[in-house]
Amino acid sequence: MSRANRELRGHIRSHARGLSAVAMASVLGVIAAFVFQIVSARYLAPAEFGLLAAFLNIISVAAVGSSSLQNIVTVQTAAALGAAPAQPADPDRPSRGRKVPWEAIIMGGVGGAALAALSPLIAGALDTTAVVVLAAAACIPLSFIFADALGLLQGSGDVARAVWWSTISLVSRILLLVLAIALGFGIGGVIGSVVVATGLSVVGAVWSARRVARPSGGAFTVDGLTIVLLTVAFAWLTASDVIFLRAGAEESVAGSYAAVAVLVKAGFLVPSTLSLYLLPRFVRARDNPRLARIGVLATLGLSIATSLAMVLLFLIAGPWIIHLLYGTAYAGASALLVPVALAYTPWMAAQGMLIKMTSTASRGAAAVLIGAVLVQWVAFQLVVPDITAMLGWFAGIGVVTLGAFLLLDGIRSRRLAAAEGMTS
Image (cartoon, rainbow, N blue to C red; front, side, top):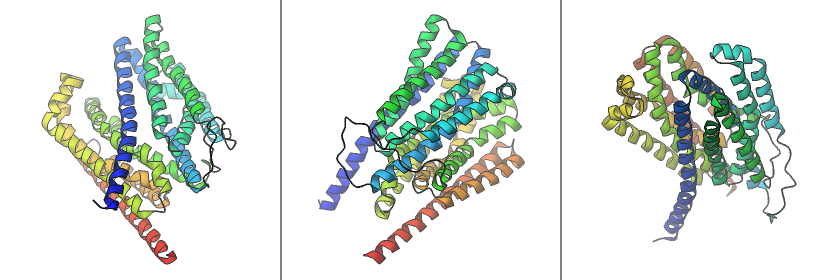
């Protein structure tokens, strides 16, 4: 065996160990989130569970913003550590370069204050109460500070610890939920368990990241705003199908589609896990086109393989899965499983490529996603509630987006290779 092959195998084994730790924490987090929903649904009356669903939906929207901040901090931390000369670290002394997370405080504070101010209007639109909206508003600053701390950990290479703090937050919700049920606190206790678990996890994550030097950049830079656009636009593109059907189709049709979408989107766990692990590594290797290309091909291969395996599973056992999870009321949803999974395949691959686009804060990729949002908006306005036509447009836009990402990555790799050839 040649030396190059031995080095490659050692490289693969090293990454496999790191990815397995991240994947374990991610899977446990997904299970914890699912268990929290099931236990809450069994404890609460349907009307109360509707209040909880409204609360969690608001939190999910805010999570898109905090996720973009986490990506910004990750990229800037990894870039700063990659550019800094190696210095001996004192493990018992917090970093002197660390500053207060002003971007997280400002963004989270403004978001929480705006939500609180609009709570009567939002409560009416979501058919919930102002108290639920105010509880969600209290979580928003916490989620941004949490994302900032996770970004520092992720950017410094301590990805497993960052993921475990997210998982601990979700598991803590269950423990606090059980306590709230035992004390008979009702819907207030259920929502309170989310708020308290988030607060406790913030304290732990901030403490864990205290030795990581904060980068000099921030969210309010061109690169930072580009990463925000990449994160928010992609999140909208992969969620708008459910939103448009909810607004333009019969309630039963929209409900069946939403149930199927929940199952299909479980496939995003693979590119999401890869993103957590590979994003800081792509940042450090962005001037090394050969190493970055290996990462891109591995990400694409795993994302596409996961999606195709899901299609095969739904083709074989789709009706049984629907009956097991949702019961006979959703029997008609089984016919949607394979078409929806196929339509999502290019988007799962595109999310794998989004890791690379985020690592370079690609303006071209941001422009592609903005264009995709506009095209998708017009197309869905024209074809909804025709699900077949909607899925056709959804898949087509995903293929074009993936192709554009690959083209942009290829252009950048050739430029780097040419520059390297000129200097050698």
